[in-house]
Length: 78
Image (cartoon, one colour):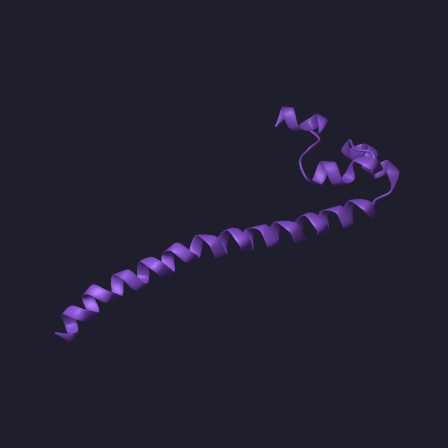
């Protein structure tokens, strides 16, 4: 009887855990993306204006470029 009960109950518990996993994964991805963008912005702000010009962005466009709102000129050639 206990083997039958464990077989019936266990898949239900597993299904609940799997339903929760994507939510945690999405939250974790959002947190990781935030810190990656923050690091990218800090790195680009550390560059001088000539290096930014070589990349194809102005200092005022750093945050928009990191968030993907600006298409860089070389992006179309790749």
